[in-house]
Each structure stands twice: as C-alpha cells, then as structure tokens.
Image 1 (tube, rainbow, N blue to C red):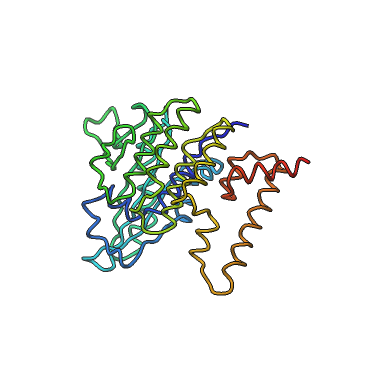
Image 2 (cartoon, helix red, strand yellow):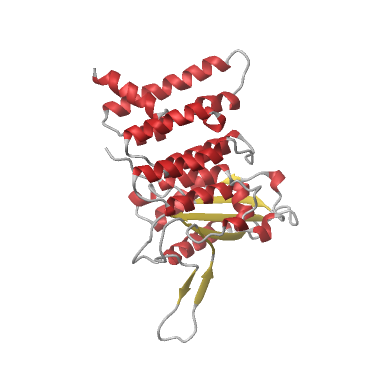
Length: 317
C-alpha cells in the first residue's frame, strides 16, 4: 500500500510546537507588543465550531492545520489579540481562498470582538505550501458590477514556501529549518532515490540541531521530516531507519523517551514508559488487523516502521 502525504498532520505539529516563533515570523510588527509571560491559549474547540459553519461537517473534520492563538498585549493588559494561521497545501481551484479567509475573519470577529469590553483585535496569515500561482490570494475583494467602488477589501499576510527567501529568516528561529524542509520537498524529484537523498541531507542538519526550546519542538521537527518525505521503496526506507539508529542526536528521542523526559517522576518513570509502549503496541496490533497501512499506524502510535513490520510478521504467522 502506497504511503500518502499527511500535510495537515505535519503542519499541525509545527503550529502547535512553535506558536511564539510563528508569530515572530509572520507578525514582527506586533511580536514585541505581546505579553508572552502571560502565555498563549489555543482555541481549537472554537475553531472547530467556526469550521463547521464554513465547511460541510465531513470536510471540517479533515481541516486540522488551521490555528487560532489567543495572546494578550503589554500596553493594554486586558487587550486580547486573536492570531489566525491557515496552511494551504493545494490550489483551491474554483473556490476563492481569500473569501474563505474572510469568512474566518468575520466569524472570529462575531464570536470574540465584543466578548470583552476592550474590543479584541484579530490578525490572520496564510502559508502556501504548494507549487504554482493558482489560488494564492493575498486579499479578498467584494464588489458588485453595478457599483464602481469595491464594497470591501480584506487583506491578510501570506508566506509562499515556493518563493520564500530563507536568508531573510533569523538563524535563531527554528522555523527557518521548517521552511527549508518544506521548500526542499517542492524541489525534490519523485523518485525514491531523490527523496531518500534529500531526506538524509535534511536529517544530517536536524541531527544535532540546537535552536529548539524543548522536546515538543524536537519531536515536531522530526515528525515534519517524516510526514513530508515519504519513501515508498521498503529497502530504502529500512536504510533510512538504520541511518537514524546509527545517527543518534534528536533521532534517539523516540516518543517514549520524550514522554519520559516530560513526565519524570521518581519510582514511576520506568513503569510509565513501559505502559506507553504497551499501549502503542496494542493500538498497532488493532490497526494492523483492521487492514491499516504502516504510515497511518506510525502516525497514531509513533512506533518505527521496523517495529510495525516485525509486529505485522508476527500477526501473519
């Protein structure tokens, strides 16, 4: 079964792990005005409700790489800023993407603008991750042919991965590596050999990468590389897995080791780790028996392909 790209899962992990860095890159004008010490709040549940109004119910459940981040501004302690980030991995063709961005804006406005007495602010950005010009709107214009002037113009920030100048992103911002990976994917051929070479090259850079703040960011970067660069040839995939084992660095941090670092408790650490592994193995078994492919199993369990293949062999005997 051929593996399929999961762009939504890839970008979702990045948007969650690098909230501060995303704002710094997209909105440098307001970055220093945010009171980061008060923390951020993700409005995933509210976002899902908004999506159901914009998309049909089935489609809204698949749109997971959008993000609304709630922060507070320094100068007006109670002033709230809602930052909406949308990742678009394909051309929307006949649909007007700019109109969709505007619909998000007025739904967020309607839901939050007058919820607090200080009138919350709203800014938005779109990240385009595909090739070509189709659908890469930078604004939405509402106009009637009978009326000369535009009735409404809605502008939003955009980043086009295909055209982004990496040298303009600070070396201290880990998103430079994220966009380097995304840009590299667009420039890589479709042959497994080309994908393998590109993946190894990026993995070498990631191996000892030291610009991250925590293990969630390490995991997000590793997952991003895995989700984007899919090797169909099992022999080359096994070769890549062997490379990871030999490389160490960030690749030593399996999901269980990361959890071990996050949930370190005396006397319970080892038991918790074993419990997490057991749960992952049980989930993998159930998914194999349900006929699921390795890519989906890896995404849900975080087990390596070699482990999944071994488990698959045991179940088939």
